Image 1 (tube, rainbow, N blue to C red):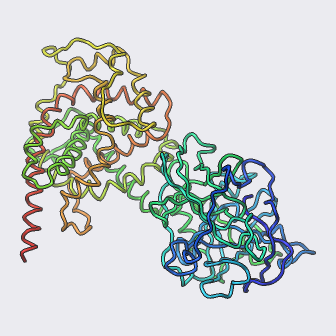
Image 2 (cartoon, helix red, strand yellow):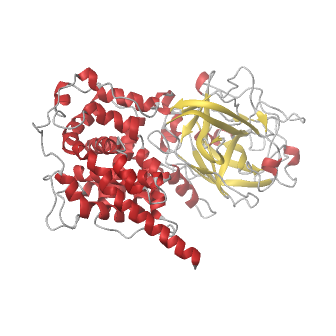
Image 3 (cartoon, rainbow, N blue to C red):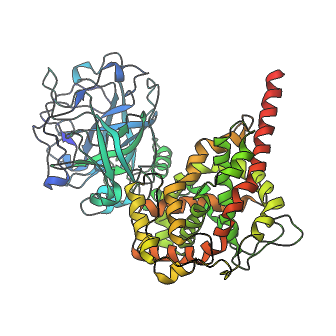
Length: 636
């Protein structure tokens, strides 16, 4: 357990409940050496004392860091009262006035056999027991706790599930800004991560250990899929009492990306938020938010004769469901829409005299064209923001990789749909935040953009798509090894490089030959998708697509259209591609993606010379219309 204990009690903290605080033990109690001993892992201790103004005042950036005192059922016996017991200390952080996030082992102790948490004292502004009644210090006690099923029910605690949410007796009223959380990135290079909390190895001038708040930020490289138990690892110095501290970045001191819980001789670790390796924070938050109150029944798992007012520990049926999580709800909607495009494209989707179809599997091809159209439109808008130069850019810039990226993304989407349900459920944890970040921009632009490109010009575009291998333009074959030389472009991340190499390792001579009738090669398609286009939908969602929305969008959701499923499919396909890039996959996935590119690529890559040219006039019209409206509004 990473919490620290205090012994030799004397009652000096306010009630309820009666308190005890005294010097903590010189070393935390441990049973498993490297995995639970939070430690100073650098040659020189890098922790800094936090300026008290940062947590004494309501507007302090660390005001929402909470000092916790914890009492467990195993500490109470016939001979030891709670006033005589050694209370543990830990750290938490407020996500609401009366909800504290902390470590799971703060809710249930496996390491020392202490069992359930039964009492919690929580302070903001804490800076020593002799100052608990001073201005700037506020106290609450806990009434309920929600923790993960995997932590609670495992024999010795499951590190990745080491998180809990504590409901307090009443909201803190002197905290100006609470913490929020976001999904822990799968990997980062040079991220300036920090842990802020109350380490128990440092004493104040009164001899009280864990009395003052300390911080340490350090440049960190990490990859979740290569770390111990897929946890967030860092060389940031901590000690017992830091358990439950938020892991922050210097970019925003109020957004946590992990919960500090474990340590070792060379690094310390955090449990992960959301994603394929993390805990569903919104689900646990909702459970904790609904708990508490004097009318709650006793925990049904304890004997009826035991009428002690235990805190709650919540179970799998209430904590593991994604229902109510808006990110997951929206993802399920997008998956449903994206799947609907699998069907033959009817005239209700494309308003034309006759249905356009490659046959029963038209959905992937139309999804690719729609995805490329949206990405190219964003690039054009960003490069020609004024509108006057957009058409010229469309005729001169090929925007290499846009269509290749769409093909590769569609292949990834196809692999996602073929996953076993168990694997698909895990994968959706990664997809949700990506889909949520793209949706407002793509769905806001797509109806008008796709109508402008699909109805008047997509038929012309499709007329240039070769239905099979052409014998007229058959080029000299390239060797398999030559296909793996994919040219130059943007610098790839380590994950992208590994993904590219994994794909190209599955390219054989028949795959190369499948592209002989096209104007490009499979190596060029895959290479340009990663080296030239990159995560293009994410990029244009930041700059290009907002320009096409204009200033009058006002955040209102666009009205649904028959073209929405194509936009949803484009979003989900890009999210799936990023998922496969960032989450390690076996050879089978790489082979499946290559097999799909082999089928999709030859049919669509011949459309490359026409793609951007047909989109240019539509983008130009949209930008001019927005500019005219803004000028008219300014005059009025």
